[in-house]
Amino acid sequence: MKVGRSAHGCGQNCSPWCSRLNHLRARCSCTRRARVRSELGDNNLGAIDRFALKLKRSQSPAARTAKSILNYVRSPRVPRLPHAVLRLLRPLYSLHFAVIIAFRNLLILYRGPLFQARCASFGSGVQLAGKLPFVTGPVEIHVGNDVVFGGNVSIMSGRLCEGKPRLILMDRSSVSWNVTIVVNKEIVLEEDVWITHDVRISDSEGHRREVDLRLANVPPRPEDFRPVRICRGAWIGNGSHIMKGVTIGEGAVIGANSVIISDVPPFALAMGNPAEVLIRGFGKPSTAKRDRRATTTEDPAKPETDTTPATDVQAL
Image 1: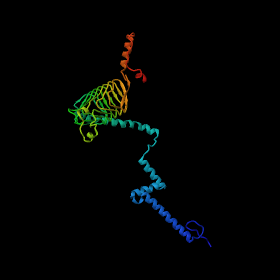
Image 2: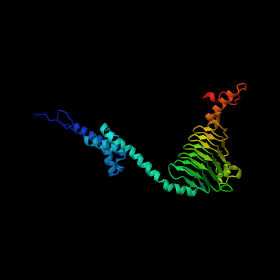
Image 3: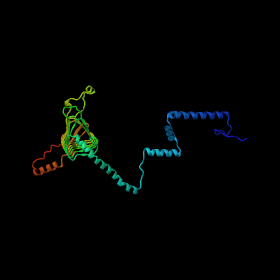
Image 4: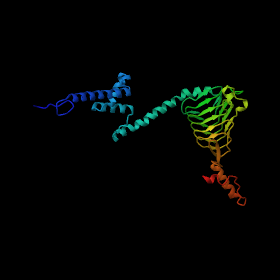
């Protein structure tokens, strides 16, 4: 008599116990699949989500190809091209930015007159390198000759102080990108001042310091507004904050990300939060050194007097 093979793989005829065992295995498998489906939330998914989940779990060649295409669409990679094609495409790179710069320069014919109409006085040779400066409030803006504005420059003011607030930018001063100027009394940038990107200058806090008055929206007192002056040739590093009542001396250099809450003397290097003067006699003009050498040569008997501390310039 030929012995049959059961469904569960044994080499004997299926006994009732074998049939019962196969039934229990099938129930356990169905229950396990249902539990996993329930934990993953398949029953609550829509048709598209169920298709995406099925595609993600599948390991068939078609599913792998589809997943590769989707991954490329989500985060494409730059294909490697032969050198002959790269030589042909290289001029297009320069042409791409040349068109953008040319179009941006043409916009000066639109932005320039609008910004000039907003200013109280406007010099010659002013450059707008980016977007039209955003101006809000009653601020009175005076722009000198050859002043440069970067993009995303914001000039804000409010009617918090008697008289019109004034912003004065003298000749050849430069205001870079993402600069915010909050003026409620007066802010003056003298000649050849460089304001680098992400700098904030404010002549007031805009609110009272006392917590109860601040929460009650009590306006600041007149003495809370203190003008800011940045003297000629000063250089303000990126990300710095110039607070109210500060005067930055001629030729001074402010390090990046500094918070200036007190005056900085001329030709000094200051940095930190709050900023401290680290080096005095920093950044003096080269003509000053030549003049000092000439004076020493003409009068060798007279001792040279230099009030600069020995640890200042020599420390560099």
